[in-house]
Length: 377
Image (cartoon, rainbow, N blue to C red; front, side, top):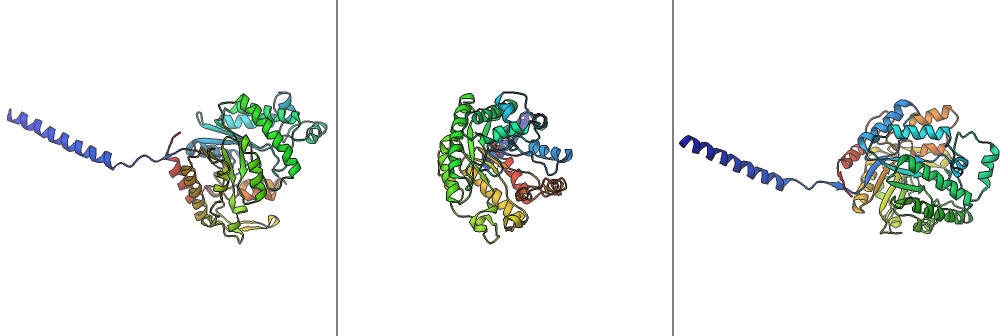
């Protein structure tokens, strides 16, 4: 009996100690860190090879909770307008995106209604075997022509049906400072009609426009004129190229003007924030044809990423997209051998979270740390 009582007492003591330790642990545990926004990249590869395409999707599937499927290759006007089968190149591209994106991964659809200049209509979808007369017919139609509106809405609808996105940026980088005022007036009509028709078709999907963040009065004014046609404050930012604080080449983000991003956010502060695309150089950017000689390093890249992620946390943002996960020096080299390279492509070459050799930069570690925070609504 004495032995039994002793055992019971021993068990109770152990239980009490265990309970005290357990209570202590609960009190000491920090609150789980959270973020309100999805984090992702585009599947832009470091080179146009199967291995690098695999690498891009592996990064998305392992280190992102959303993928940005970004379409910026022109519009299949004829096929979209008449609801015909899409061009073979587009079908192949779509199949690659769908089969390589992990099941259950959230999809962000981002489509440009503009050419790469961001101040004019896009051309016909590349590698499409249609006659020059058909291309010329669509080229001469103004932005506000009902056929252009219908073709574009049908194109967005086809992409939406294929990808089932949670968000749609239906007009990438719509506020470039170089717009001709008369042409922009037509574009505004186009945007308003596209938004109205898409909202009827997809009432439950947030639709938005992305605005280029810069310090020009013109770009800011153009953004303000389109604000009624966007549900998120969508931003596209590559400040190292134009920010006034980098005039002498120094791209340290700590030198940014105080209201650099806030000015755009304040255009409509009640709209949720979404970084539709961004990136930052980790190496020097020297492109003589653009008079660019900017200093870049891995520390400043990390600081920039942290700056924006903290801004997203503070503003309870919905989305954050870093454009490419790895430097694409090899891709640009291949384009040069094919005679397809443009200096424009060099602007983002060294913005990867990994360098061209696949080595992880400090910004990669920041990315992983933020990805490990619990995503909440």
